[in-house]
Structure formats: C-alpha cells, structure tokens
Length: 249
Image 1 (spheres, rainbow, N blue to C red):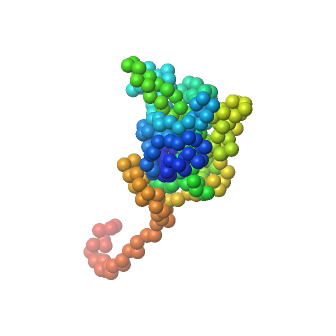
Image 2: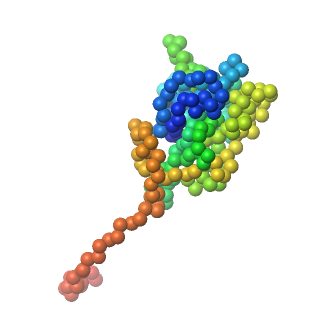
Image 3: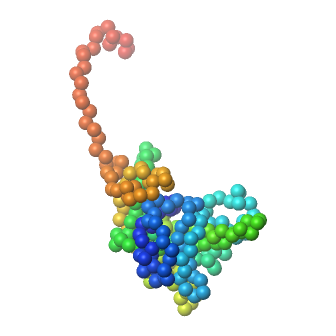
C-alpha cells in the first residue's frame, strides 16, 4: 500500500513533465498523508488539466460518509470490478504527480524501518489514480482521489508486498483516455515497474508523523537491522559465596 508520498519540486517541474498550462504555486511537500489536499492531473475537454482534490476517495453514491472507510489506496487487480471504484475506473482515471513514496519494513521482532523510495533517475513520476465527485446533503461538492497499487517488483519485495502503480511517461494519455482509442487499453499500465526504477533509502522515524514535512525526513540513516551495537563494558565479578551457591539447588 502507499500511505505517504512526496512531491518536492517546483510547479514548473510538474508543468514540464505533464505538458500542462501554468498551474497555481504550491510548496514542496515531503510527507503527504491521507485526507490532505493532493495535486492530480486529469482529462478535461481533451487536455491534461491539474486539480487539487482530497486524498481518500469518496464514491459519488455514498450516503453515510461516517460509515465509509478511508479509501486512499485501491488494488489495481480488482478496481475495475469493486463497487467503490468501478465507475471511477471507467470514466475518471487520473495521474498523481510524485517524487517518491514511503514504506515501512517490519523485522522479525515487529520493529519497523521506514524507507524512502525515490526514482533512480530523479525527477517527477506519476502514480495511477482514480478520482470521483461527491456532494453532501447541502449540495457542497468535493473531489477526491485514490492511488492504485500493484505487487512490488523483485527489488522492493523485501520492504513491502505492495506499491503504487507507476505510469510510464509514454502512457500518460493512454491512462487518461486521451489517446486515439480513448483508453481502451488502459489496463496494460497496471503492472509493477522494472527493477531499477526506484532507489530504496533507509530513513529515520521522523516520517512517522505527518507533521514533519521537510527534507530532514528523507536523510539516509543506518537501517535498524544494521545499526552497530554499543560495546558493553566488562565488569569484574566477585567469586560466588559457597553458602549462597547452595541456594541454587
């Protein structure tokens, strides 16, 4: 799954990657979390257009918002058939710009080591996403989105079994339905990326709190499993007293 990601570039970098008209200024984000506003790219009037939406998809047919789970991820293998995502998969696919994402590797003792997964070639990438439009009883409309996930590639499997679907640059229009076939073959996008696409960087626990939203959370650290142990000072033991030793038996 993907519960945190980053978009730490300038707006003009996003404009260049997605060949879009000028977008509104936004600050670099290093620790984006569910329910926060996120930038997406969607098809509007035959063009790629940016939009700010809430991360956590709310299906348009939702009646009881309190009963709806937070749908910030959707499994790509079943999204086309699940009621919560079916309509969005057919008609409202989007791209979600990112510069990397975070995952936590759990060891045999239950300790978690966070990793920052950044593109090996740097720059901006695009996650495959779905968006939807929901209106409350008063007619207030909110646009929301989710990130599609797939199985990890061989390199990332030791860290986690799921990861975001990464849309290759050449398939942006295919995923958005802006190609000649109007996205008829969009399903071919939903595969793990090739090995070597990402660099896995072990980082500190600062990423655990969404309030930490700065470059410091991406600094490389020694992984928990590899951290050197502090040498223990030896101490001289007194010889056991014979009378006390008898108490052991």
